[in-house]
Image (cartoon, rainbow over all chains, first blue to last red; front, side, top):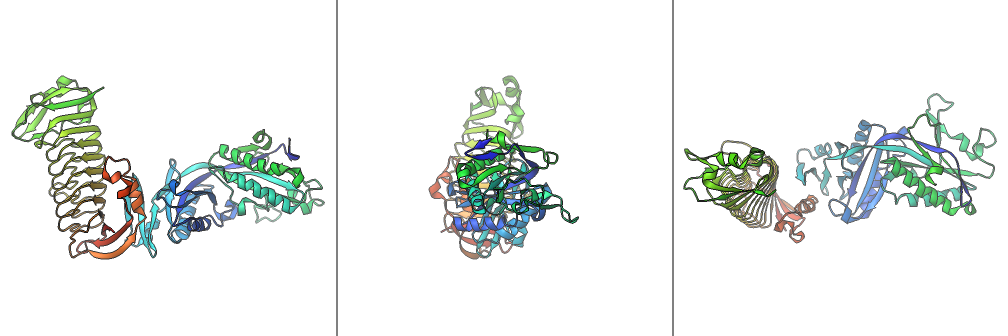
Length: 298
Length: 270
């Protein structure tokens, strides 16, 4: 398949079941809601070493937030429920509770309830106040700038993590421009996050390593500087490869995001140095969710 | 199906216990069976059809017409369904109700919504003392649900209240929120003396400055983030509380009762 001069490989991305949750952070203005959200979703690019994958889903209009203030919706993904709950609580405690003027609310209904502010309340040292409003329990925790308002729980749902595609370009700047365009398009799709810095990862990995201590190592088949010394996947004109990883609530959400992203990349086309779109997989043996690029773009 | 309607034929001299007339007790019963139910009135037992004319057949939607202040225990332990009381209700309206809704177009007597657990109680007129309170000797008053009173309320509203919300559009008597353990009481009108007396936790949300006991301490003026959420939750009510213009988030906070646990608060609109 070729779109605007860009070859879409007959391959697929392989993804895994994960557990996910969503929270809404509000603040006095969008600037501070975003600061808090960035802190909460920081150092959360990959479950390999961060414990979770997290990202900002979108900015919320005051009319969309529970307390009518500007807000940001964030999502956290982890391999299991316990890990997810721990990450959520730790990050909420260190990054939202501490952030000036912030408030924290559940962003997803249904699923299994997991603590959001339920245990953060103990920071109130006995001065915390519970309020049940509209059937939901909130905690008002006295802090130095006033009160930190947080919903007691949010929900944990089944989700999908690890959807991806690779952008193969003639140069590094062209690969980056294409990925930026893809991320801009994909951020308009609900229920997904792209957890890597700016949504883009330049160090895609393969399973295993020559070093026994490492479970993953550089994806040498896609490293352009190794074209002459490994079993490469790259043709001579490819000088740079970047990857976009997508976590979503459902397979359908990731489908939509991948389509939006690949469409944006193909919009730039071969004329802008984009040669191929490929994807990372493990032969289909590890992850139950397969995203066939040509089917998505059909 | 039309509402199961009890129309009072005459006003008895003595109070009548209407607690059997709740949906979970009437479900599946024919008119003749309902008519034969006995209602306690002092030492006497009165058949339902001795007092009421019956019509309609939906036990989940009960209407009591021509009601007056000697019909006690309406909606006692109500567990689902709705009761509409046209006229006044006597004492113990909605006592211990577990779910469902009760609406009274007139006034309600003592101990309305006493020890209520869940559901909604709406009183268009006034309510007597111990609204949402505990029965004498008991330690726990209202444990959940919502009470809306459009008129005035007597003394000791929310006495020993444990959880839930009481909204009062009018004035409230002395000792409002006394011995409260938790929950929220909002009063748009004036409050009597000793508001929050011996409250341990919970919130009194007031539109007018109360006369507080000396054991309440001023915590200053604050903008509180939970108030917009609280007011937003009232939006669907048929009440002045639903009006977005009456909401506020700027309050003076008084903590107390310091003679007790002292974790309660009185929030007064600024």
